[in-house]
Amino acid sequence: MFRSEYADVPPVDLPIHDAVLGHAARFADTPALVDGTDGTTLSYEQVDRFHRRVAAALAEAGVAKGDVLALHSPNTVFFPIAFYAATRAGASVTTVHPLATAEEFARQLADSAARWIITVSPLLETARRAARSAGGVREILVCDTAPGHRSLIDLLACTAPEPAVAVDPARDVAALPYSSGTTGTPKGVMLTHRQIATNLAQLESAITAGPGDRILAVLPFFHIYGLTALMNAPLRTGATVVVLPRFEVETFLAAIERHRITGLYVAPPIVLTLAKHPLVTTYDLSSLRYVVSAAAPLDARLAAACSERLGVPPIGQAYGMTELSPGTHVVPLDALHTAPPGTVGKLIAGTEMRIVALDDPDHDLGPGEAGEILIRGPQVMKGYLGRPDATAAMIDPDGWLHTGDVGYVDAEGWLFVVDRVKELIKYKGFQVAPAELEALLLAHPGIADAAVVGTRDDDGNEIPHAYVVRRPTAADLTAGEIMMHVAERVAPYKRVRRVTFIDAVPRAASGKILRRRLREHA
Ligand code: ATP
Ligand code: MG
Image (cartoon, rainbow, N blue to C red; front, side):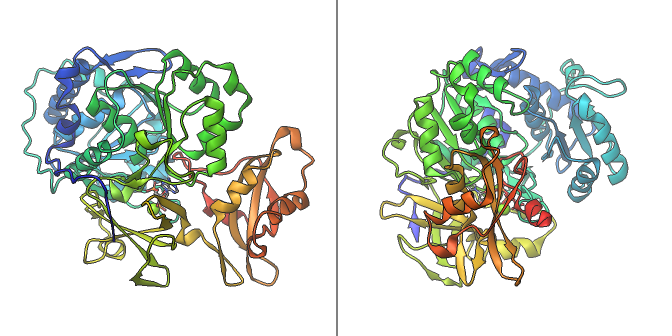
């Protein structure tokens, strides 16, 4: 068993709104949230006051302890206010992908039994259709304005008393995010107030921002990575969060320059953009002090190309999953220069890990041996909503959560993630990790993006199949040249055996490759 090197942190037994905004008075006039496109700024004093007013109005409207409220919005400065107002009124917040179709949204509403929706006017029609088809929704509110719907802006004028809800941090669900659905249908993940609040304290042992730090929130708040790294963590420590509604390369680079961003939390596709996009050199990005990547495998060479180009310390990675509130490993900011390339970090405070053999979960492996990563700690989810079997399949009776990821630790305790157990391609009995081949493909100067999946050849054998996006300057790059490029660099069983050219790699909002889609395509 592997244990954290950090001293344990006591569980944070507070409702999430108090764990995050409990110190807001101390940061008073410091900007908490800035709209990265129009500059609208909310101070800590305003975020604190506004979320309390909205909580009072929601309580007056009937939102009560145990209710589920669906928050359906791209990143805006109102998102955190809606979130903390809802939890203060006693609700659990289920965050919804802003690009979800009405059908997908309806499924999440029905599965979570949500009774309230907070959306934005451009998404209102989808929300209405979802609510009609799911049933049970009492009111749809908007963050901005829309005829016939109450707006958070109106609710700020509410004079009702603040709700006094007795939240039980250890039992009550604060957030009900749905897992990304990379490997199957998304499942509702019940995270209690204590689990997410304690995870913030655990992460602070290795990474902490504070007043004067300016974080760019371009990854979505609705996903647990954004909710934690870009909303809860920086707002708990007095940093300033500059908010962008979506990733668009020029707006993103301009926001870093204009707002003198000091820290970025991104996923590998943005690291790829920063390493390769021609526009990057036309902006002043000198305010950046660190870049952290998480959510999907990041190749060490790509990471190095990015940090060298930006003139920042080596990119630090973090590792986690929705079911882990979400963090378990990070490269501490004070170890960016000393951590080995490619590592996702060390165990954060209060977290235990085992690495077990893929064919025998009772057989523990030591340093240098790759196996399934098991995690135990206060951040392990309460369970999947309404799916006791799926919960039991993931968390064993001793409290170990089976991540489904393959990894190994080195002698110093740095974790390396190889890939997901389910994504490993079995070529003639040998295991091939798509992430390794993708990294090699991305290193080719003519390749803009790539994804690898296992598909069947004519004899029914599983083979590594590469989907490749060519750079505009390499339109004549052939499948044969690509297969040669890989074959020169890997053991024979790992060779790419088929290549398909595509226009774009399908990805989730969190940056993960949607390999399912490619397999369906094949
Ligand atoms: P679903 O469980 O619904 O199929 P998902 O697993 O993609 O979707 P998330 O909880 O968003 O949903 O993602 C967690 C997963 O992301 C981890 O299990 C791991 O596979 C991957 N991951 C996270 N961080 C890293 C990292 N630094 N390197 C490699 N993989 C990572
Ligand atoms: Mg998962």
